[in-house]
Image (tube, rainbow, N blue to C red; front, side):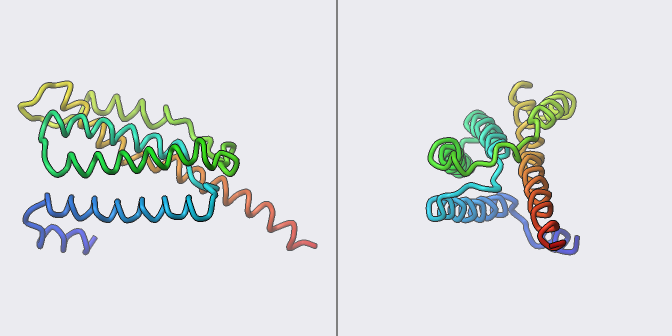
Length: 170
C-alpha cells in the first residue's frame, strides 16, 4: 500500500507509468517465449489464460485505434503479437506437454461477468457507447484473465502433493 501511495505522489504523467509497465510486460513475455523455445515444454502454463489475454489485447487494440492512436497502440500491438506467438507455441509446437486436464477453468466464468459489468459500468467519455463498453470490458477482462492460470497452478500443486505424500509414507 505504501508503494502505491509513493507512486501516486511521484508520478505526474500516468502515460509514463503505463509505458514503463508495458516495457516490463515485454521483458516478461520475452523471457516466457525464451523458456518455451529453450525448454520445449509448456507444462503448468494455462492456454485459457493466454487466450483471455489475447482477447482483451485485441479489443484494447481496437479501442486504441478508435480512441487514441498513439504509443499505446504500438505497444498493445506488440503485446498481442507476442501473446499470439505463445498461444501458437502451446497449441502446435508444444502440444504434447500442454496439461489440458489441469487447465480446466471455464472461461465463461470470466467473460460473462466482465461483459455484464461493462454494460453496467463503463467510462463516460464523448466516444460512442459501444467503444466505452468495449474499453470497460477490456479493463475488467485484463484484471481477471489470470484466473485460469491460478486454477492451473492450483491443480498442478494438488497433483504434485498427491505424488509426493505417498512417497513419504514408504
